[in-house]
Length: 169
Image (cartoon, rainbow, N blue to C red):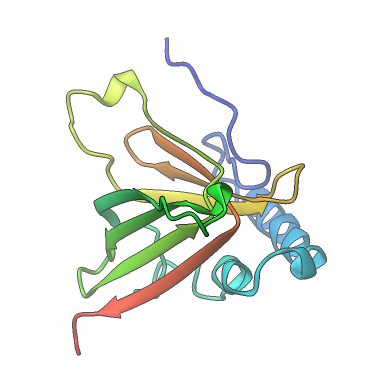
């Protein structure tokens, strides 16, 4: 028996593929982002609300991208607020293999990286399927990501910065 963990607040489709249901969930998520625009840092909002973010035909869209690396770093300088000291950098190979996506999480408060047991023999996350950015009860950002092979990540932080690095340069 497979255990399905409750995940995203808006974009958890639970294997439903009915177009009207998917559209309604995306509409509710876009409304949530618009309603909370002033509470979300500008760089995180731009990434979350970008018209290309959920358009799999756009190479900047993270859907179907692959994890290349994940780096967690911690600053130990006396002038750094300890809550701002953890930074996570995620590098992805774009879905069309024509560039990389760099996502930087600043001021990380918490994180959880899970790969559910039924995918252990595969030894990779598989394609990035869906993600959602929202505010926590304490006003922090939560970024949840679901991968094809049952990998689920959640990062809680102060800000998210997205960058597309085209190989065409």
